Structure formats: C-alpha cells, structure tokens
Length: 211
Image (cartoon, rainbow, N blue to C red):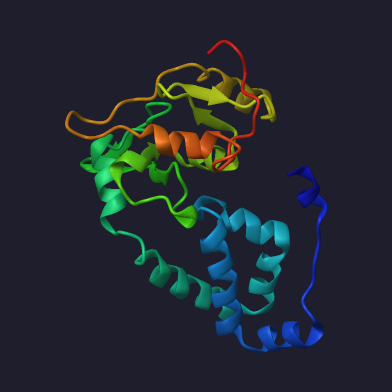
C-alpha cells in the first residue's frame, strides 16, 4: 500500500498535552502500539523515524519507564521461546551459519518469529528462526523471505552498500539450515504469511529470479 507511506496525522492538542504530562501513560500507549503492530526488532528504528526518541531525550523519566515496561511486556510472550529456538538451531544463524561463543557462552544471534508475534504468530519452534541481528531486521523489514521448500528469497527492492547487497544476494536460493533432528522446521503456513501479500505481505516482492 504505497499511498500509506505519505499519510500523516496528529493528536488534538489537549490529548497531546495530557500524554506529555503523564509519562507512564504515554509510554504504555506507545509500547502498546509497537507491540500490537510491529516485531521487536523494528521498535527502535520506528521510535527514531517518528521522533519518539526525541521525547525520550526530553523526558529522561520516560526512557526509564520504557525499559521497565518493555521488560514487563516481554514476559507476556512465552519465555521458553527464545531458549527452545536457540537450542533447536544450536545457536547458529539459520541463514548465514554465523555462531559465536566465548567458552561455553553463546552470543550474537537472536530468536526471530517468521509470522510476527504482534500479528498472532505463535511462540513455537516451527515459527522460529535463529538469526544474527542484521538478518533478523532484514527479515522483519521484508528484504528477504523463504520459498515453500525453505530456500532464501531476496527482494529486488533491497539496496544499500556494495557489501550489504552482495552479502544478502549471495544467500538467494540457498536452503535454510534445518533444526536438530526431532525439531520441526518452519512451517509453510508461517512462511506464506511472511511472503504472500494477501496473508501478511511482509516480504517486499518481487524476488530476484533463479529460484
């Protein structure tokens, strides 16, 4: 829906003043809107794009409220989701194979929902992938998706530096890593939600050719 990118709106001055006067209420409203419509990986970028980060700077207590409220909201999701997905993929990015560890401590990857949790996606391994943070954001932005047989699709709309473009395009057509035996790979219903415009439409079609 390209037309929506040019839309704008504003709150009545009395409502805006009331929200600015109550940092707890303002943060709850903002976080509810973000949680209800966007995956967590996009929240910081949306705050910057909409100027909400400037409000955090102007009202330091709001930033503290946001941290506390986010920690509280995260518990609404199944706390086992991250642990189970990371274990299923052995803490390795399902797209690039990246894995990092110091001693026995793994880091540098995240558990991602394919069908966004904010849009009804379940907290189960079959709806999860382990991704490095950049691949996670690119997935949620729709720069890449998956075919029904779990091969990586890269959007023709993705642009950036030579390094960024070459890195992502090099993955086009590659099969996704599979989880450990006994763990269910991502289901086609969740793949299609992410890829198909009539279902979720997150992926920015069309894809590069050759898959």
